[in-house]
Length: 93
Image (cartoon, rainbow, N blue to C red; front, side, top):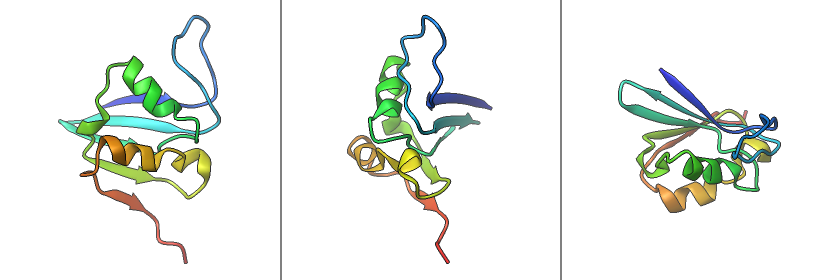
């Protein structure tokens, strides 16, 4: 299993990756790709996926941990890259 951090709020010295408040992880396992959260509204997850040469159009499913903007910020922009992946989110009670 490989987990790539696409968006979070810390930056390593010398890194070309962007940061923002929020979280987005690309999880790859046995040929399946899951996008866990989409990060904040600045689009860092999509920007970093391009820097890392990761094709989000190949994501099989999206899992949203909860409905805060720092975890769902670019979900609509993700759909422009991939309108086939189902999105899983907990139903609010």
